[in-house]
Length: 637
Image 1 (cartoon, rainbow, N blue to C red):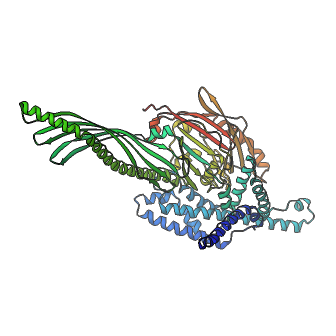
Image 2: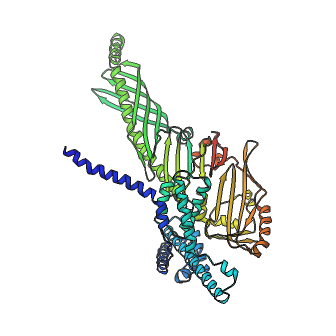
Image 3: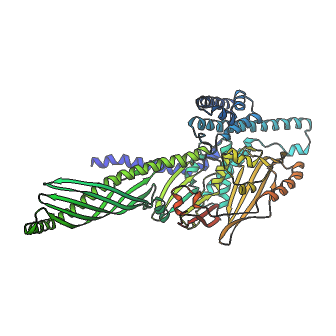
């Protein structure tokens, strides 16, 4: 009875946890309605300057010991950054100095992922956001103060009475109410338009550092992976295929029987997805044979034996986000042993009799010998098999960290979550990019395109990535921007990039993409546009491409409509004059179409090139998702 009494408090605790979790999940909208606007303070801004200065000092100290330290300092624009951090000014020059260094701390250059540089980048991201917030607060206060002065001079002016400047507090209140209503609606159902609006509102609250305690909970509740790469089971088997050939000497001396020879192992090892759970689980499978040749001697008798052992082995591997785990392997062996020759040092009838007796004895011992051969083969192979797989999986993890994780770190594109998922048909790498300003995807995945490799990406992925790379960034020359990032372009690629055009991207949502009905719509938001170095006013541009299949190849064809609009509240005379200029230039410069061309095996990394040339078998967009399938021809170059 006492065991039941002990269980009651535990059951009560579990029930309390369930009820608490349910309550906290359902009260998000109420907490949003009760939240108050939190302006950034001068003290907070100074703390961020100090943290950035400390990180800058550590980065410079590290670069002093590097052979290319001075070149790195110049490339990262440390001198203007020093000036910006030493001043308490909140102006465009300070923001641009911080922004310029922050973005140069991301790219494809080796070394940009050093801990001191990534820490500096993190501090500059926080400082830049704080400076922009402080500037917006100052601008809002100045507009309100000027409006008050104008009202005092012209108290009856109808335009002044009807156009009171909107404060950040008022904008926050309006968006807070809309946000809460949308979240209430999404408890039961939400349209793609609702989801996009949630993403926009999330972006605004994140960029203004509001609802900081609630937004992570919203992401945890509604968020999901918004990018995934699928590798089909046949493709995974091809990519991981390894031919095994090993030779092992045989030397035994037991019961006065001396045996020498060798065992030759040949076979193939491949990896296969097996489970339907997280973390993903795969099985390494080996199939092969061991051919053994043994020469033995006992007293006056010598003999030669040949054996064939069929080996199959399995070893499971679990792919977790931060490590790969190997489980104990199993092996099965089935041997066949035959006597090739029996000789005796005696000649004549005695020798014949000795060989006959020896052959009978060998035949009598063969069943046990076969079992011993199977056991020795399986034991010896299993040990090496386990050791080899553990070593190769550890190497695969190092390669993943080095090639994939480090590349993402260089570009400041680390996903918030990264999962390996499996079912018997495929291995999936699912990532969630939501540390930018786009809310993670919520909508249902479209029907996946078939192929060796599938890529599924939600439009919020590109919004998040572009937010990290381009928010507030000033690009005088788009072609040169690719060089700064360390991206090599072919002459054909360069021809498709607009020449003589530049843009100073907006601080919020600089680039957005929409995937709907086999169309790709792109929105570019610019504080300033540059045509042949001539600055234009702030304008937003929308253009789109339609996916078509032509001669067995998918092609994205640009629509004739390029829309140019003014940011909210910024439509004026200069905009009306310049919008047509920008529109005509974009119609002339934007590629009329681009083809999803095959990827030659020579351009693929090892061992993916085993799939051969990858052809785009399917491209489709629907419900905010883009899905593409790649099929290899298995023809090695």
